[in-house]
View (cartoon, rainbow, N blue to C red):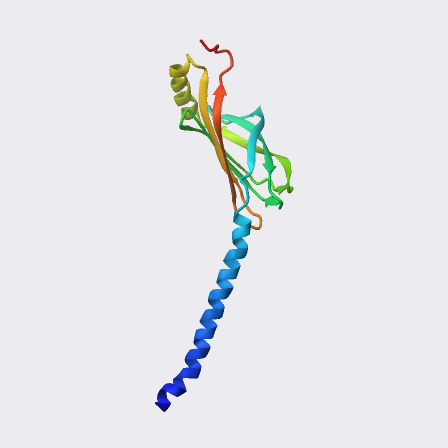
Length: 168
């Protein structure tokens, strides 16, 4: 019996240490949950400007208007962007631009996008089938890297109307 009593104080302190660790982890995760419960950023294309490319590729500077509908600012130190047209990958780009999207504010971020030659040819062939409607589905998704919560992802999708194609 004295053997078990000798072990009991050590076991009790281990149990209390384990309990304290579990409480600390639980409180930390509860605090972080408030950070991750934020509304998603709103990202829209504000402008597209052609830039010089290499060989047969096309390149564009895409200006994104990033709106933050949350009560805390979002800091970033890099941007990644992918554009899909008609359900197929079309263009991608990255930028090491850094900045902050203020709370309940907006900022414009510029990302150079590259359209590989084969993606342009694939899209040209695919667009021949939608000449009737003149509508092309797009999806724009990417991320703002860095900041307190790590990476902030965004996603936007809709329909593009091709210029010069009248709806019948």
